[in-house]
Image (tube, rainbow, N blue to C red; front, side):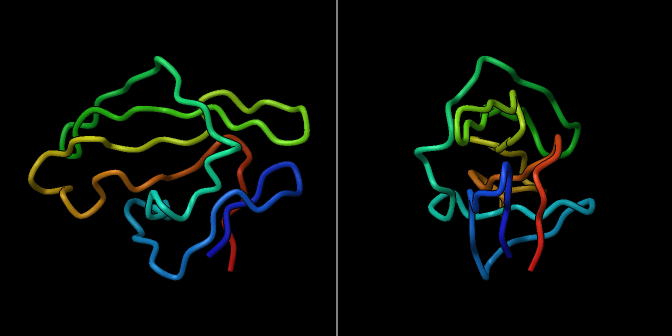
Length: 93
């Protein structure tokens, strides 16, 4: 699977995990040069507290367009530190 934003592949992996329709990419599969951690956090009742990245590609920013769980609740331990996308990031094969 590939995550693409602003015509650039920002993550690529054959080992994504699909939960609630989102592909979660292993953390080491993202191209870290495009990602900056933000201060945004949200809470999922069964996964835990999510942290966010802003994605910057070719001079354009997509705020909080990627999220991950640095720590998870027991039911979500399989996606600890995996990264998922929204806000216009395309995920495709």
